[in-house]
Image 1 (cartoon, rainbow, N blue to C red):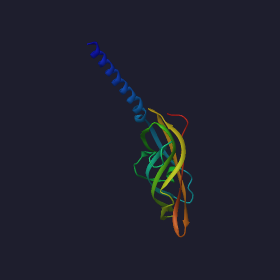
Image 2 (tube, rainbow, N blue to C red; image 1 turned 120 degrees about the horizontal axis):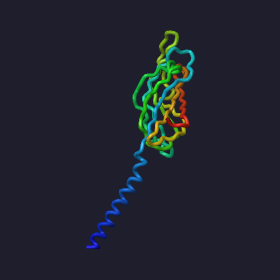
Image 3 (cartoon, one colour; image 1 turned 180 degrees about the vertical axis):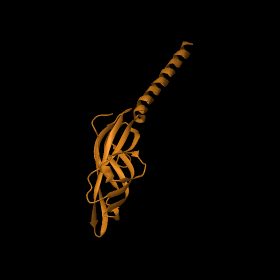
Length: 176
């Protein structure tokens, strides 16, 4: 009888140990923090409006591969007027992301239209994806505010008109 009880006790201890180990290994990877993304625009000259379509905003986890390390912060497509964003920032999203260190932010753009002097010019994009270095940590249960500043200028190359877009990312040191 003691052998049966002793065996059951060993089995119970083993099962509990396995469950504790699984919790220790999986809880950190399942933990998330919140990232609130705010958009602004840098000074744009010679335009009344510059419309761009923002498709996605992603952050890259430090130490992950270039292909697999991206975590989507926003995938809501919206048309932005960069000239209006010079004076009025816009909150893009508040989304959950895995806790950990991140090293850069990437935005995907589509469609650019330049309005100046009553003339509307559809522009090609020099690059549909823009990337900026930004070192930050997402912590469990905390909200991190990231400010993305988009900018650009119109240029003509070999008869084609382009929007040479720029991206800057600011991450404050403190959490809210």
